[in-house]
Length: 235
Image 1 (cartoon, one colour):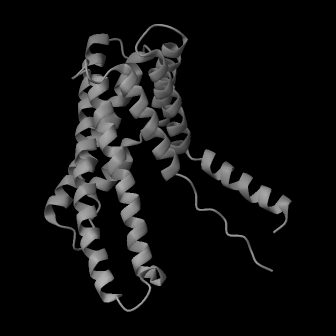
Image 2: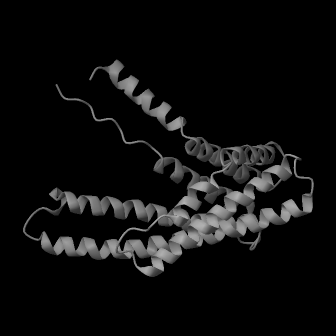
Image 3: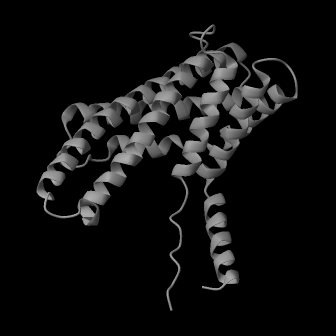
């Protein structure tokens, strides 16, 4: 593959990535929480960027609640333990509720919905829903990692005579474990971000802490959305 072909392939991946509404939302989220970290809750340019970016992001999430509503009514993978099924469905229900209520918050901030007090209350309820969904996600990832750990150990016993890293099933399980570990870290950090936004522990979780954790989880989300790289063709 020539240098021009390689550059064209990389640009095609970038276009594919940026064409995703979810990817643009997470990039804006990184800007929002980065600004929150810089402002530390104090008035100024950084706080203005935080507020305006937060409002702009809500447009990307219009009708996004349908995604988790679909996940709520979709069948689960065979063999999934009942507690994990219930936690997964709870996560879908809470996240769908958060995204639906967030649309009302957007209407309030744009002036379409005139009842400001009701909009603020709905905003807090939506954040509690997001915090609950993050807690459910954390518990689901812990449970799934436990299941994967058992499966990996079983494969290691079966592959004692050979190189386990040459086994496709073992590598797939290991990759899945790494992905779920990253998702666990992200969900746990998002729970703290939600606590910070709700100001449930203002002395410990300051706007700067909230901004730093939110910026980190945004970068993780951006990484998770990256398309698979194009493999170079060998002549």
